[in-house]
Structures are given as structure tokens and as C-alpha cells.
Length: 198
Image 1 (cartoon, rainbow, N blue to C red):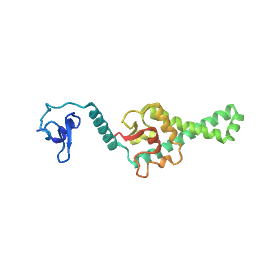
Image 2: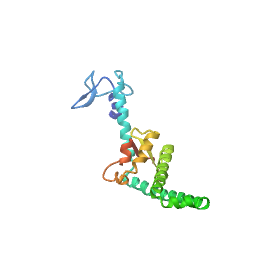
Image 3: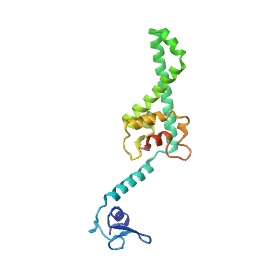
Image 4: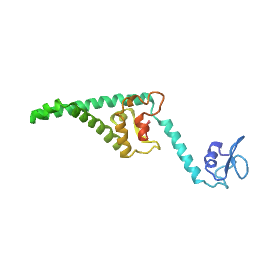
């Protein structure tokens, strides 16, 4: 006879099922637990129940795959180092080009702190948005074998990734996933999650 767990995969989405407090899910026509081997003659799939079950299975699978806080913190540190490197290299190239071709513009840039802030902001936004939209992973996520997905486990759209990237600039966002939460503010606001690909 088929195992109860396998039978329940059919019974949970059958139009004829009902819940009995003593027995659990039973056949609404016989009042008994399932006894079929391969298939049930009385099985009628309920599209609404099937959709709910698929969504529940997906959610359970996502919960099992969600990255640990330690991995998320490693992602933050690694991406921070990569961003430092990119900002340093970008600044070096910009300073080199400006000092060669336009020393006046270099001096104007050097004294304009808001412009420097917006350049760094742009590099950081570009880094996360392009990489995570293209592959679901920043450079750190390649190293830790993690990936950004939607709450349904799909690849996020461009809008969700832009929102996610912008939310990283909320003060203390990097620490928002540490206090027992499985996701940070930039995850919850954008409707995304970071899962392990192992």
C-alpha cells in the first residue's frame, strides 16, 4: 500500500477531502483515511487547493534554503571590500584623467564634497543593480554561493532590484537582518530573499 504521506499529496488537493479532528484528512465520501495504492477512483483535483498547496510547498522550500545570518554578514563584508576597491580604482582613474586633461576641473571636483558623495552613491547603486539584475548575485554572492530571488523563488525584475539597491542606503540596513530576522530591510521592502545555491 502507498505510504500515507504520498496519499496525502493527492488528498490535500482533492475536492472530496474533509478534515476529521481524530484522523486528519479523510475522504469526504467514505469518512475514512485513504486506502488507494497508485491512484484514487474518487480523486477530483480542486484547482484552488492545488494552487494553495503549490504555494505552501514553495514557501517551505524557500524557508529551508534561506541564507544564514553568518552568510549574509559575509556577503556584506565581501561586497563592502569590493566596493572599496571599485571606488578606489574609479577615483584613481578619474583623478589621473582630470589631472592630465583638466586640472581646473580636478580642483573643482576636489572641493565639491556633495558631488563626490553622489559619484560614490552612483558606483554603489550601479554595482548592486547591474550584477543582481543580470545574475541574481553580487560578487560576494558568487563566493558564498547565494542568490537573490523573489518571495516565490523566481528571478526578480528590474524594479525590485532597483528598490533593493536603493534600500541599502537606509542607515543600519546592513545590520537589519541580524536580530533574529531571516531577511533585511532591503529584502522585505523589495519583496526579495537571499537563498543558498548549495
